Image (tube, rainbow, N blue to C red; front, top):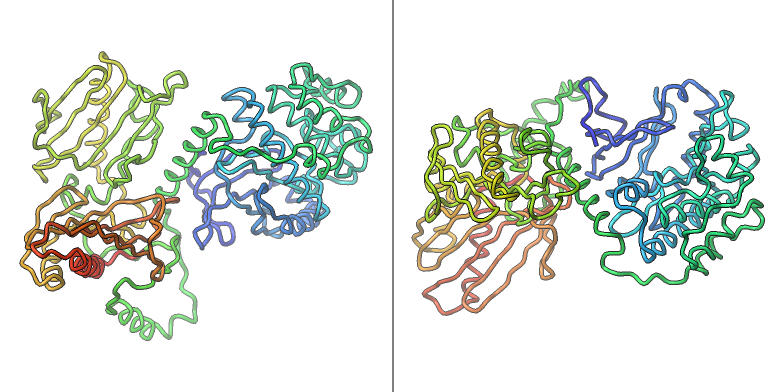
Length: 614
């Protein structure tokens, strides 16, 4: 996944483009986001095809048919524009490596994973053939391995690039030589049996790491496809009984997808059907997607529609009325992709202040090439669901383990830190080394009780050097005023839970005199007769007991004389939810029920004061 270069279009139809996913024989593939917040893979065809009127008509016809394909093992086509200067189509984005990438990185799949793969592929082909399509280019790079099964992509689209035969006027081949059928290699009319042949070749490659007709050159491979027997010597006997009839030279001798599924039978599904390396690749891609989504949106000139000009005053009145309306746990069904209105307050002048740090995404402070002395980094995300923490792995295939980890925390408590006093620039710091672990915590003058900590785990000889290099980069990036977290106003990240303006609403809600005590960048204790701990963070799933209120969810959990009330709503980061917890306890009243009532009133007071725009 690569960032889009300057000057590239950032919009196709309804889709905002955020990164490049790669390039193939038909064109480029780009990562986009729909207006509804759904990730899509946008395929933009090569200019050479766009100048062919015949291609446009075939492209339109094939896309219309492709949109009829549904099912669990395909990436559905969502939209297309055959009339655009460069025609494009958008399909559901699937996070996961291609089969080719997985086998190249981790070797052949184990037998159980091949059975899982084959069942999904056969099911996908059955659905594709049901609507009258033939895939024509089923190959390892057109099969993605997602957490919940394989996905077949680009079905039917290769047909748009063909004329009357499968060989173009330049002699190039539409298809992949090692996985096309003999009739396709010979330029003969195709039937669904052609895809079955490709299925057999693909399953063989997944199980052995090698295509069954691979030759030293493309002409040799094509000759093998048409004339030679497949190399199945290393294939498991059960798989050989499946694959051999699929690779018959005569299309009529091959089984159909229904017969293949009958042969495969039911799948004995486990929690992790793919090898561990595949899940690591999925997690890495998800981290790259989060990084791409976090990039600032380039400013685009916007034209005001003429019909808006005479009604500007009326529109402003509506906006002001909406802004001044008080909402208590209101319906927040706003489009998650549309950026929030810019904050009216200027960013704090001190880049190391708590207010500034709360707006920063710690996973963006270190990039892949930030530590040239230590090695290339991969952001591993936030394992603890805290806004101010991020973990990184060093991208060295022999060292991708917990022994090569770098973690960053922007709000670590400095009191009680043990280690050797030192300096990082002009800032006081504490360095602590235990075995192969080394941590470096810098005291932040803007928030003396809290600091910034980098922890490295490699070897006793190198871990402190890594921590020092990383800390220097982090502090420089913070002082350079990094871009805020995208749409930060629509999240809970920037909320100051000890803010003075919260005191009166909280005292009114609890009928108590309260005083605040900072617990961290995203935590605060409000103490009176009852203590209320406020905490903001993000989670990947909802509690079973949560009740939907508009676009948000509310849960209440009583634990003896204590009570936890939580408010959760969709976050701007894919796969995460923003969450505000109120822990009410240590009360002089004996009733936990009363604590739940007051905790809920505290929650409502915080929500209405903080007013996240999610």
